[in-house]
Length: 184
Image (cartoon, rainbow, N blue to C red; front, side):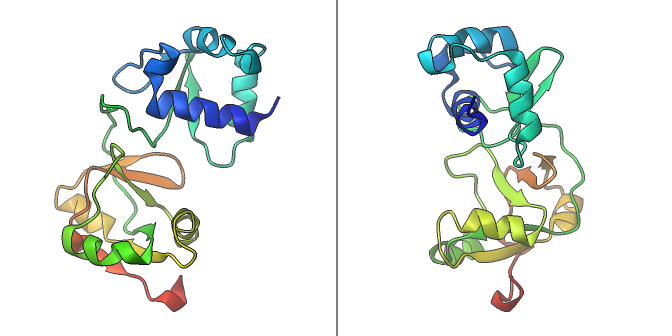
């Protein structure tokens, strides 16, 4: 079983196109595992997937994209579905980080961080994770530092995605600083 490919398939199904799999997510993004398995089993490639496979996939994943609880599974972050997945606001660390292509910095510094095609702005708990995210779109990403603690005290809501990912609805520009490139 290729757990990386299974993780990508689940991410697509649970984050972006549940209707293609005839899945019905609840308001927090959960779907019953039996419903998911029925959908997966329609594809010859995933006909043998079991709940144990899902558990092993999650346990072996470094990125912690999914979770299982009480016979249900969900993607933790990255949703682009029209129905917004509700999250519980949580106090963030004092600083969070965002890796971005250099060409986007001027717009971000003027307009803040916006969710764009996703439901939430994605932030990283550390510079290295932000750099890895930024490298997906630019060979020399810019690391932005977000004053998350102050933003939260001023009423901006933050949501915990996983141990490395934090989410927010928007981050106004006044809470964003550009990191010194030497420090990134």
